[in-house]
Image 1 (cartoon, rainbow, N blue to C red):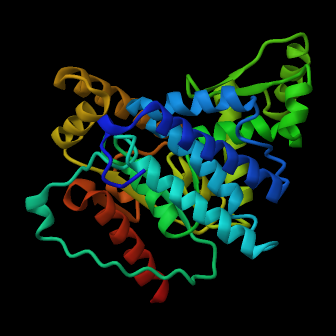
Image 2: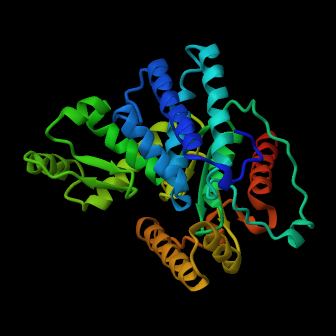
Image 3: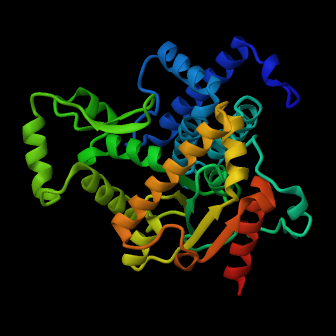
Length: 349
């Protein structure tokens, strides 16, 4: 499929071919890593390919598609130390898949957010130091519609590090529950947390062992509500992975969690004028101005309340961050270059 192919020219056969490539890459990465996370797509080939195709054809689910691919990339990067050649071949295929996806999904970094007149006043450097040795952790909070997640994902890819968002954390919690691999979880009566890709949410699967499971976790989390138990589990995961890898993390109060645990990181807040964000979400979701504005404000309000609840700080207060960015001044690619350049300059001081 060529880079010039428009969405109208994309056929079901094209989608099926790419979905099969994603499925096969997941299998190849799992076989190369023996990861305890298990395979991302645990269903049979036909069911999994259909699920991937469905996600690719719905623009407003591009975040789910991004998380699927990011999880595969995260696992693939663990191969390098053991088999550099296998890692190179897999990452080449991974990059090819990313390129193909970008031609299909309007929400996968293709719907730009750029104020061209303002951008003329900005100078963006392409410099990035890929040889930094210490663990580089970038925490990003973002207003809805500002392309913050797309910027974070592209930044992780540029810096060759892992990417984590809410959906990936939920998947990890599901698969790593009590230190078991995905096959053991699926075969157990006590399944606990599960992640619904279609609803993009974590839930507890009721079964005969539910009471025993809840009692076990009641002791572990001192009777906290489920949402708090999930928050503290994410906190544990964040602190654990900070010891072994570079990564970009979206939201989840990661900046406050790492600060409280005295773990060095860079905190970034990405936003854009409301009208620019509304126009972008109208294009991605195919909604009218009023609907897009209502949803945008609802999501921002939720994120603000979530951050305030767990940190006692204001989510949109510039003083809480190392760096605040108006993405409409730079666009997605320009914002990625600016952040990467800032990190390089800071670390070389």
